[in-house]
Length: 80
Image (tube, rainbow, N blue to C red):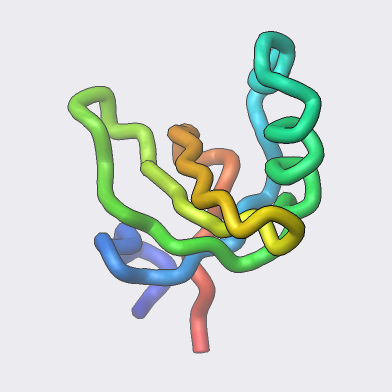
């Protein structure tokens, strides 16, 4: 994948950060799980109607699957 190509569903991407206030209303367990994957590869499931990426990961402590929706500035393609 070149740097100009948009990652596609099924690609692994690097979650670089989260929007300010993103986790303010989430339960503590979800905040911990999401914080742990920032800086890690996560699965890109697709894009919503607003163009945000749906990223999925599994909480290694509980086995719970989480999805987050973020704009492109918060993730990047993983190039080989």
